[in-house]
Image (cartoon, rainbow, N blue to C red; front, side):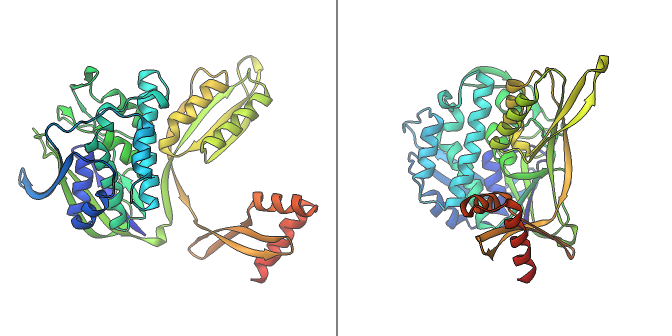
Length: 390
């Protein structure tokens, strides 16, 4: 497993992410060719080696053509550009997820809907190129997993289309919900909304360098001049150490409910799963004045926190949600098809250090049971038997 670890000791910008990956070995010519598949114009690319406060690094610069129109775009316009491009399906889908998160953050900040959000700066050509360039560069480096350090945001104010705003900018703040932040004595905007969207969408964990054998390192510079440290983003590329298993970080959301009916809790649970929760469960408790209640717990990826919290506030009577980031160790997972009298059924297989756990995929078994008019347990038993005979 190839791992990319972003060391944001001085923050991050979208251009810095691309530059660091190129500096770490992503082919610049292949990157240019891939980006040329975007159906946008009015810009040129500059990729050059520079020295920033004593560090040799790479600069990635999107140079806008003078006089070329740079329209404000809605999410649908950006998604249309991505989906109509010549990029690989994986790059297109991931870039779309980044912009979806940006739109959700902007909508929450401005009290509007995702469909009505004007992207302003982040919908401009340079932001689109930065996002796609980052995703494409990771593909060129064959990166399987992204991990990120705690993120410094900076301090002071920043001027944008909405006027003077505090740092971190409102959209950046929203994007970093559930993410550990790092203290930094630099004044200014250290982490941009574009970088925050890329890192929170792609990263499976935020914390120290994961166990890996280092194979490459890259430095990408930004345009800001650092006062106490160089405006540089470092990326470490390495081969994951398999014996440690798959370790990532997720967020645990909890709320106590004593005045919400079980039917409403069940409906809320369904909505949470539909939105992408990893797991949802309830535990019965006794609350003040001996009222019966439940703890409703949601496990989700860091990027899903805003969506999960919206559902909890909308569908339950809660006034507050507890949130904490937790690490988990996972079995290496895969699916294998097994042939049964009721058709092919997928087995979910987990493996780590010689331990193998396998179980029939419930939805496949359910569909087969309904199709053949047999008991669910009969399909499950047949699937387990077929797996044992394989």
